[in-house]
Image: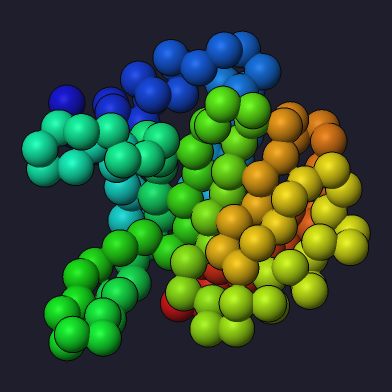
Length: 140
């Protein structure tokens, strides 16, 4: 399967509410950045062990490690989790920026240094969430 087929299969495998919310977010990100690189990470490490939830990524950025290594990774990611959906905004230098900028007005969501987690899309202010996503796409 190619990346788009993996993404579609992943979204289709979700319960209806998560499927609809993931579809809406996926379509929004693709409209905002139609030429961005698509990623699908199945959540397995090289040994086949589950290390994270599967996730869909958008865009491309380089991660530089303290030991001098670097690797390509996505800028924005979305993932279903046990209680809802996580939106990852990668590459923010200030680990307080996302929380300080978006938590107050986003609605029922948990905001960390790089993640916005919520149960259902209808629980959050979608304009604020989309502003955070756009910032993540444009920032890198």
